[in-house]
Length: 297
Image 1 (cartoon, rainbow, N blue to C red):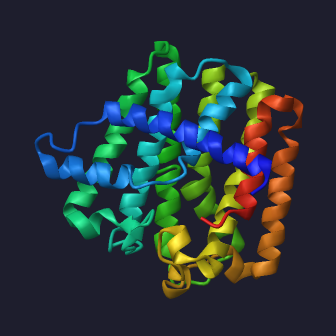
Image 2: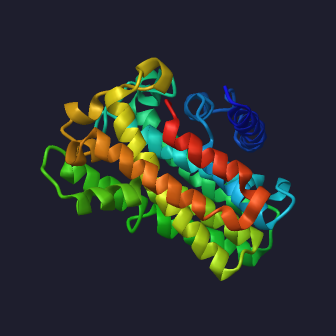
């Protein structure tokens, strides 16, 4: 493993522990009544994962700000939001996945009814966590407004809806881009936008980082599509081959594997170019972008 990759791995682990401690402190204990819902929430939230979205928030913020302690509740909120989407995605009525992050999915262990409630609870807890952050009320309102727009029927849920409607159909790349811009890209870019808002970035920097987020978000999804074909289930911690089984349109199915790889490479190259102006402050974002292109999980 290269020195840069070790540096990134160590920093991801450090930030992940900070976010996990924050979420653990915020959420009810697993033995708190009613136990089953709290066990289900913790089963999915602490099953593992890279904590990519909190990581993007923290390092975007550090381009413009200094102390991350006060924004950790917001970082935790993004992970709770992301986990809610995973729990609901895995349900039999949607993707019907039995494994997530190397463990049995929430609905497999606790049943679809409790899994649905666990996801709902995490969404509400995410809002509560943002509200608990020690930042001024004007900033909180801005974050909560962005949160609602990006994750509701005009954003994340819209992408999920079109994904469900498109299953088994031949769709154009425009529709595929719509699905993943909303279903995946919105949450990645929300993390970056939150970092800009909390760091009080200029309009020019906010726009620059928005473009960075758009590019890594799409590249992330393309690589995810490729890993569903070529990835190892144990390494990924989830089932592979689901896209073809469910006849879902993916970038490889529309463009082929090689062209999809080239698309991802170009997107990551363009994204990294957006970080040059920040110099050493952007080292971890740059290493992360490079990792996203070569990731195996």
